[in-house]
Image 1 (cartoon, rainbow, N blue to C red):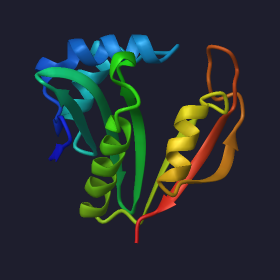
Image 2: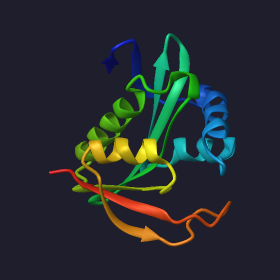
Image 3: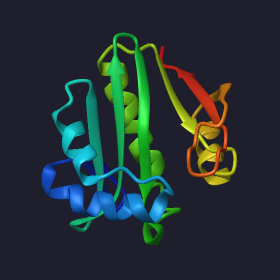
Image 4: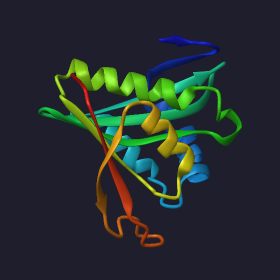
Length: 150
């Protein structure tokens, strides 16, 4: 899909080194290279890349199991933030979930991640629960957010 000056496409194994670089820049508990290789083989998972002029600028993933979808992660490299790439990735992940007949989509987010919270709220996600001490690096809770897809 074409969005402004970037393209959203499927993640390939050739993207994983750049994905893990962005992962380390974005999260205190980054996923490993092997985790992403495994995810590309997972029949429940779909992973996308935001490609800016041949560079991996961001990525996101979703699992769809029966009627429920779960955003596994979304991140944009710091130098590419605030250009609509995160929103575009979310939009495409939601389309995948709908195409696979999911009726709701959910995700976890740190209460301290204000930019992500604001973006999710603007896309129609509502807080539906708290996962106590979800993040093992500092014991921070996670806000569970849900959006209906019908």
